[in-house]
Image 1 (cartoon, rainbow, N blue to C red):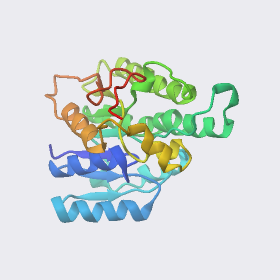
Image 2 (cartoon, rainbow, N blue to C red):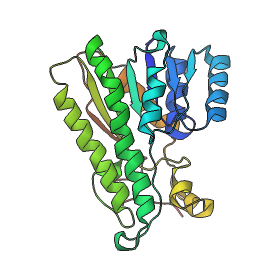
Image 3 (cartoon, rainbow, N blue to C red):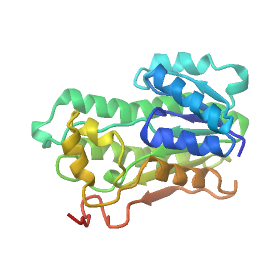
Length: 253
């Protein structure tokens, strides 16, 4: 596509998958995550494999001021962002709502909702001014219905759906497009974080089923981004075969 793509949470999982997919198609990448080392390593790998032009932009998306400073400091040749992929997100804990950790709630709300809003607010006005742009939010099947031990995370992803729909409405008189991608089971570091570092419990989530991976979701993101300009892919629900809903999965154990 030869476009400039900003990806948050680009150092692993779905974000890294998107970086590799878009780089392979000849796009220029602005890579964001907290780890400078991981981003630099990824950028070097993309340069070697695809001759990709990458700009590394490390900061914590939850820090609004850091985001503002970093985006303001983009060199002129990187300021015209064509596609924003709001990917940074996390889930922590599987506690019942009345037994949960409020600090972990704050972390999920700050990352999954407030950071997405902040980055969108900083990037989209430029898109409107230039008369082109695409916002791709990585939501979740969890935003469609709550499940046990996931009420706060589910609520944050329901918010992503609402924010995507609202932004699409707000931009209806512009050429900009908004897509909400809702993955089902995707095997990344996500579950390790959710189970507070317990990899055995995380692995059990995917045991008996072939889950999706970050590259699979990247294929979906690229499909939406590469659609003809008159076509807006508003929402995509994508799951592994043998998953029917957020809670109904057939496993071969």
